[in-house]
Length: 369
Ligand code: BG6
Image (tube, rainbow, N blue to C red; front, side):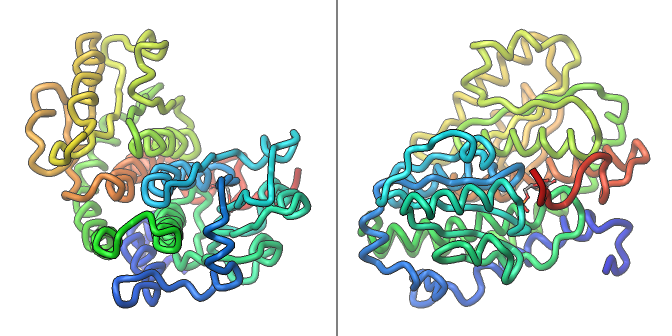
């Protein structure tokens, strides 16, 4: 039930620290990942995996895109992300050493279910990430890693998304240990980062009032663009999806490096652009590249709203608004940066008098063709 909240979505956005904490709980012991559900897939089988294909729809597919960066970096195995409906209606190359990883909050999405069934028929191993105990997709998979976000009622996914990334990261770290691609020390560092996320999420939520004000000022906006690089790219896609779903506003997310190959032509004076800015503190940080993208769009009149790390002063001269997120290792930034984008879409929809729990034309889970 909604408790004292005005909408399920508002409640579920606020529950994100718990969604992550509950998904991690009991799964880290002695600085190692412990996921008994994965025992169905032995270490030998996980070592034999040569490729991971992630299948999912909507927000779940963006969780998959975020995880692609992490799993490749940690476990050194190629990962591709496919929309389930694109995957199932062609003849994808699936071999016995392909692991097909499905992501579905409901566990009932027909396209994802059919993709999993196809993969099994082709002899692939299948693992699902799911938020609903005993749902059809986990039953059809060799193993399941449950997200423990609690029931998600609002159609637009929020807490399930951060829980999906969390579960995928646990899976990726487990895989890295089994495959010997991270040292025990490196693994411990990543696990500490993951365990620190709930508290950081709580502090991002404290910025919500500022984001709400921004949304209220922008209630008449007709188009919003979102930019990011690396793990910030899927967050840009998710920010755009949230705005489309909830506020019925035209929105697009781009990889910032792609700007000059087309999208920059869209920039005209006053065009609002959210930019997910990576932390400047890490070696090989993409921060300078993103700042130069901001300068390019600013020079053409864009109204820049930067989501940047606390203390990052380099964005200040170029951004019209800065929303701060706490310090985190690069792969953990998306879990934090997505929150202001969720809040922005929700508040803008609310400012337009729309039903944020039940947007028009959408269903929580699509169990038909
Ligand atoms: C869509 C929902 O229909 O299905 C999205 O509106 C969701 O919010 C997508 O991300 C996938 O759903 P599921 O249950 O497979 O994660």
